[in-house]
Image 1 (cartoon, rainbow, N blue to C red):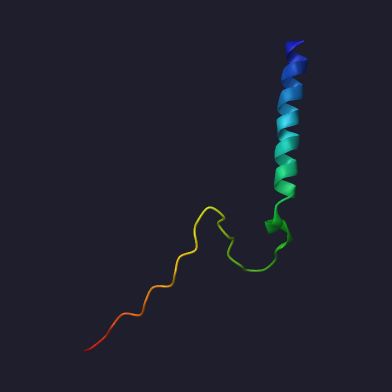
Image 2 (image 1 turned 135 degrees about the horizontal axis):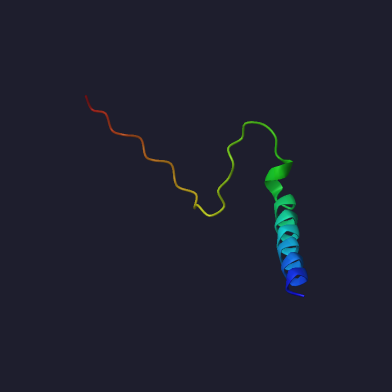
Length: 53
């Protein structure tokens, strides 16, 4: 009984992970575009440095 439960649990978790990975939007993109980090906030561009020299 424990062996069947262990196999079912691990295979279920692997199937869940595969479904999550296959549903990602990054799989549809091609090219050299840098991957977007969803957890990072967009930063404002740095202001140009004043060069009085």
